[in-house]
Structure formats: C-alpha cells, structure tokens
Length: 225
Image 1 (cartoon, helix red, strand yellow):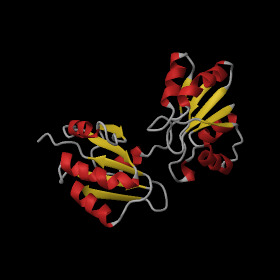
Image 2 (cartoon, one colour; image 1 turned 30 degrees about the horizontal axis):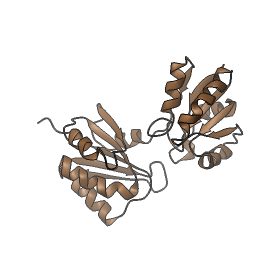
Image 3 (cartoon, one colour; image 1 turned 120 degrees about the vertical axis):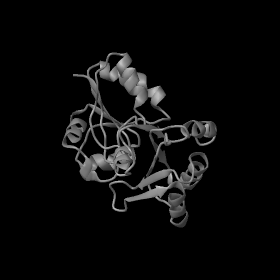
Image 4 (cartoon, helix red, strand yellow; image 1 turned 90 degrees about the vertical axis):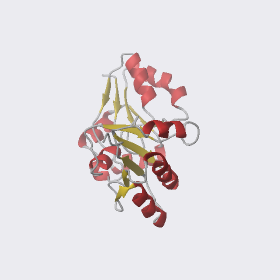
C-alpha cells in the first residue's frame, strides 16, 4: 500500500539503527535522502539497495509534486535525513504536510533524535520543555532572545561549533551568567562530551577548549521564585 515513511537514522553510533528502520528502507520503492553521499554510506553498511534520490532544503519545494504523484500511483516512499529524525531541523515537514493534505498515509518510525539524550542527561527539568532548534543568525535573533528570557520551561537549542561561543555569550547577556546550561556534543560517538554548569562556567570551558562536532544546548528556564 502506498505510504510515506519518516525513518530516523543514527546520530552517530550505527548500532542505534533499528531492525524496523532497516526493513522499511529495504522494502520501500524509493528513498529520499538529505545528502545522498552521507546516506549512501549508511545504506551500504546495512546492505540496503533501494533507489535513492536527493531531497533537501534547496529542492524540496520543486520536487514535492512529483513525489506525491509517485506515492499516489502506488509506490512507498521513505524519507531519511543525514542523522536523526526527518523534519526535526531537517527536511521532511513540507512533504509530510503535503501528504496529509492529500490524504496519503504517513507513518513516522520511533528512533534517534539528538535533543532527547541531551535533555535527559542534562540534569535539568524535563517534564516541560520547549524545542527552539537553531536561533536566527542575525535578523530576529535579539527579539527571540528577549522573548525566551521570560521562558520558564527548559529550552533546547541546536548550534554549530563555530557559533557556540557567540551563542553562550548571548545566553549570559539575556538569561544571566548564573543560568544553568548543559552542552552536549558528538552524542553517541567516541568523543561524546557533556559540559554542565552556569552559563559563565560553560562559556569559560569552551573558551579554553574550542568545540567540535554536532552540538545540543539545554538551558534552564527562568525561575518563578
């Protein structure tokens, strides 16, 4: 039966790939990948020979109609990103929305996503949280930070290593130097690191030790006291 599958892939450690994800990728008629070179290595490792097409932020608007037509004709499509769950700060949302609007069955498999382990191992409250993803680089950044300064729930951010210091400096300025922060990088990989402390302490650490790899930042919400 025609369907769209959103298939999570490991964020680092290949042992986190599920049996079901492998089966779906093998059974699908075609796979949409954010970067076919990156995903090609994953598919080769698990001996998955399904036809693969590029599907990323620069071409997803143009390719959706053709993908919908293939699914409507009876084919099954699987979407993967470079790492983690599709549509979480990665391509996948636009196609998912289009499938829902066209009454096409959509199923998302459970699996890896970077912010969950970062949140859980941060030691910060995780009963209520807000996922912010990447902050605006320039336009709208100050406005967003001013709004988030009043947020009482734990906040989750993604950041690139070369922008981490700038972001931590902004957190100090807008949230306060004593606000608790946890930075997780290279999750599930050999050199995984979790740095916890105040915004000032974490900033001091990474000023001395420039960060590398994929980064998730967890920030304590504003105290109601």
